[in-house]
Image (cartoon, rainbow, N blue to C red; front, side, top):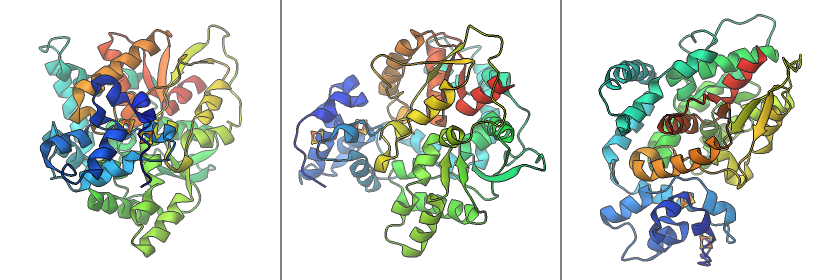
Length: 407
Ligand code: SF4
Ligand code: SF4
């Protein structure tokens, strides 16, 4: 790693530092800790500091020395016990659930039942009540294109071109309306999405927690399943896409698997990029005229500060901007992190809530009709944000939004 210039540019943009004001939470502070032998890797305070990172990459984007602290944080976490930091056990359980994504569907049903029962008795300001709001399906039902079968694949229309699809755990099990919307949307573009059997979690949560072995297990499953198909692989979740692109790096010391990972990496195509270069065969009509639907598009950090120059910022805006019924809104100061950060919102709920609610206040002041994004984690965070703000603005995946306005 290059030597830190201690310029402080990373402090200015760090969402965690903005809330806590603690130098240890900046990239500069963490790098310092890793380089002082008597401090490095020592104890629960150290573990807690390294758990307080969203892995958002805002610091790397402004660092004049090209230091990307995300790698240092993940490497540090790899040496921690299985359960570390505040709310370590909850993070551990979340990772276990993701290791068996097929259980997420059942958890969703249980969660919804729990939400229906418990929200009757929990006070309005309860954090648990807000979390249970995730399982409310009222927004999803507005855009449901019918129940998705087990693998999120409705019946083929026959004459369509086959396109391999990676729906991710959220699209497949937790919020299947996202996968269903992707199927409906891509069918209008002449494609029949096929999710291969045997896909697992992408493994991002495991890697972020420092569990490289579990991340590699997930990656091997997915590489083997995807290798049975050919042609482009469409990915509708920003986090999954960003992580799938990192698969070759996971196998840096395993040449055969690295080659397989590179073959998969070369086939990946992100949803908004695909839609940008594949406009629908029949353009949407201007509709009933003004007023247009006011859209706030939230940039996932994985795309705003993408690793290896993998930024995807203009593409979703072009897709939304060319739709005659939509008006794109922007924050005057530019996009900001929503505070979800994979499992960060579990490990640091108070900090995540401040980041979330601060951003939500700015966005809701724009008076959007819909908030959209392509990251399943960001979408969950936004649903909490809207609930917390007492707003009823729908939060939709980009595919759900586009499938709705295409009808
Ligand atoms: S921006 Fe980079 S060089 Fe400057 S203090 Fe932060 S990590 Fe060090
Ligand atoms: S990755 Fe994000 S949260 Fe972590 S130190 Fe950098 S700016 Fe802060």
